[in-house]
Image (tube, rainbow, N blue to C red; front, top):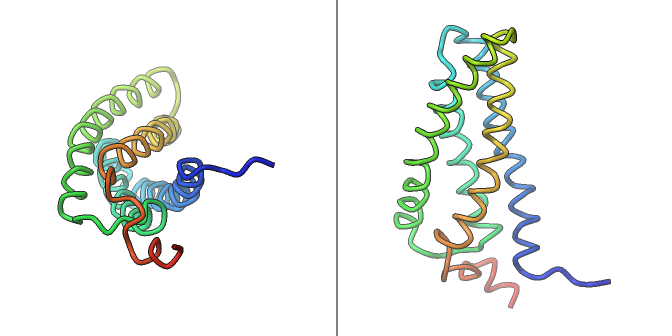
Length: 149
């Protein structure tokens, strides 16, 4: 049986930890749907995505990429990604959600469909950005990586 290479192991860890971040995002989004049904999609999306990113960054930095690199630098690079991703998905998501409502879906169903699609897109783009931009050159430098050696 072929052993997984480092990138494949990272992708697996990233997937598992991102599932937990997905629960944070979906859970906070659903809670806002219940508590603040009058909020537009973009507001609920922005808050839930921000909570998810903080959770995901913290876990993946330590356990997936094992980076001891400069935290402010890494967070700025993550912020740069989301400076583009959040407005694009807030705007595009709002348009898509409105379109689904016009097509006959209720607000809750439309918002859920758009949210799931956005989360899948975020998952793929985030791994690529974090692996090849944010943590490039600082992977396997923290105490967990040193203990393994």
